[in-house]
Amino acid sequence: MKLISPLVVTTALIALTHAASGAVVTQWTFNSSNAALTLTPYIGAGTATYVGGTAANGTGIATGWAGDTTAVAPVVNNRWTMTTFPTASNASGTAGAQFAVSTVGYEDVIVTFGLRNSNTSSKYAMLQYSTDGTNFTNFGDVITGTGDVWTSVSRDLSALTAVDNISTFAFRVVSVFAPGTSAYAAAKSTSTYAATGTYGFDLVTVSGTAIPAPGAVSLLAVAALMARRRR
Image (cartoon, rainbow, N blue to C red):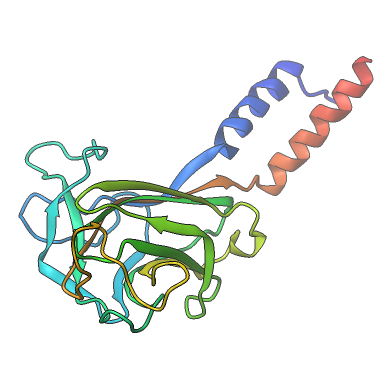
């Protein structure tokens, strides 16, 4: 029987480890070269939609997050902006932005994004996830924003195996009441909450770890067997 070269196994294992490490599944930058809103992902595939009655603020775009370095002239760095949120004491946890992404082939999902609150928008937001694209569950701590300042948000969903390797994964970021109250609080302490306040999103990214193919798993088994024989 022809033996597999240790060098071949080692090389394959290095490649497998690299492929299985965290990778961008889908990313939205909202950048464009024609001053128009684009909700098509920059990387991968997925959909981005308004939810809970929100709508475009003007053209739906404004100056993007400085952390977005993907825009190279003539492409302009944009953020996706939205308004028309619920009135002061209504519909907490329903209005904002929704994203749908297939995680087929990936596990250990992580969601990151930049969120910019206008002064009169809700200071507090929540990330919600779904395994069917319809029913959503709150996840993680309340996101606390500041008026006209970017907030970097990261939510590690790796403990939720239900969102791994499915075609119906979705999440949304929605405004919520101030903790312990039944009303929204303005993002700037000297402002008053208004439904006309805005949220802006940039670099919305879904990352994951590639699930090894069956053949790759077999290769790991071969490597383990070779290691045992060397002892």
